Image (cartoon, rainbow, N blue to C red; front, top):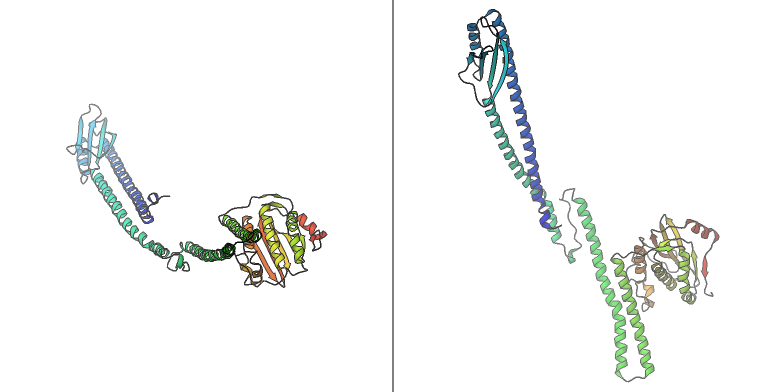
Length: 466
């Protein structure tokens, strides 16, 4: 989303706070104004009704034992102190006016009550009564209250907005400090971590995740630098060999057999470079998130047997036997598993004790998980070296002897294939027994097959004499 659409967080919070304050104050003021208006109306109605009841009582008394003159005097006395009220009496017989209190009827805001009353003696008959209450003062007071409430709402909104803006800016200061800390991070300062001691607790999970990301980035950057150095070292040796052998071949005239030997040697070095480049491309695709293309596989033991047959000659030369224990079925990328198994068996062939047995174990440790391990007898791998077995171009001292044939990417490829199947690499070594393999997720373990192979000892053995 673009910056123009999101805008400043501080301004957005300030705007929303101002709008919320204005809305809240307007609602409160409208409620106060409405309650005041209803209170004025109720008081006015009550006052008119009270006066109406009193006048009816006065007219009733006058109709029995009074006359018109007495009634007028009583009405004059009745309205003393009530300049806001007017009264007009008219005869029902001819509509003529009998009595009027106030010279002129009020105009504008008034409250009017009309009713009939008995006429006093000697008039007799019925009188029409019009009682009027002038409410202009109440209306003026109500308008004044309305203006006051509106001004109070605007002033309160302005005050809350200014205070909210300052509070928001003050509250966002830790975030600005955090931004300043991130600006100081660079490739050579990845060892630094964000200081969350002065940050609010809402930002603590973000800071923790960011620091963890910095740790992974620092490790990845260090590995990348080491990887670049290893690549340069691994490619430098065959290229130097190619250059030196070619220079020697060109120094003097040579016959076809000598040139054929030089070209054959150069071809071996070029094939080694090609294998390194091919393996690096595969690892690069794995790092970019490539996943395994799964197909139903009915037997991992049968797949392992195919790989073992490929290594049969190397096993015989090393004086080793091989057996496969266990089985499982599921959905796997069989070419990738064959490559991983080939790397594991080749690794075990180089380091296993002569005359021992290399064992391929296929077990189901948990629902949907299969573990594929190659176990051999030999020199125990130190605890410091175990975590690094799957690093690229890593080789222990015992592997230096055949560095010209093994460039240290085999177990890295095994780890990548495990991750492509949603699993992880596995390595353990103790008491002269070393187990290296991988777990594969998303596969259906054949528990019956595992049990049957374990109880009947249905294992395939490849002996040096096979």
